[in-house]
Length: 238
Image (cartoon, rainbow, N blue to C red; front, side, top):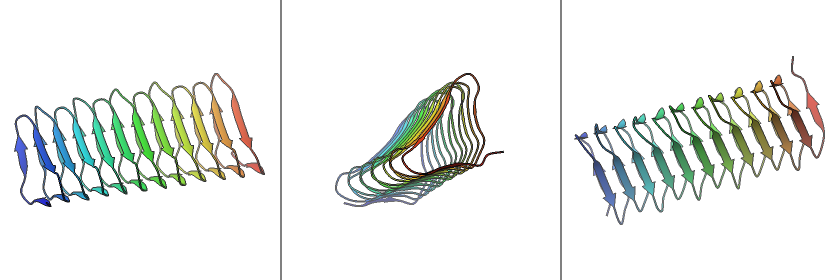
């Protein structure tokens, strides 16, 4: 049945909590200083405290929405968040390696900064996707919305890799996109790029079935700039 904790959970090694037939609510901070945090529920999940692990943080809802309000840190490895419903995060997510966030049957809202020291950031949603915090990866950033719109309102940057954005609906970016290699953005609907786009290699922006508006400056230091739209295209950068 349902699981609810209202006190702090602090372990020298691992913290594991499983609700096999109900919801899960973690009300306070969870710490595994030399190990991993693994939380799994068959229903809706609510994380209200700060989650800090020396290794992995893995949170899974197999049949419900997930809300993560506090900061999450996996200093030695990965952060993995998976929900079979709406996904919402508000705090900062910081990983030594990769950050992987998946919503297989709902929208996704990433409200805080997401940072990796030596890995990738991968966000995948079956519904609408919105990010408002800064996304900063050492390697690649990949954001996909397979059945909805995409709004990237914070800056996105990579130290050594690519930025890839793909939406089955409209796409709007208001933050700056800065990649050490390539920037690629593809939308099935209208494309609106308001912030600057900078790539050390190439920039490829495509609207396969809509208009395109490029409001910011676009730079490709050593490669090509390719803009493609099915309908009207407008550029107005400085």
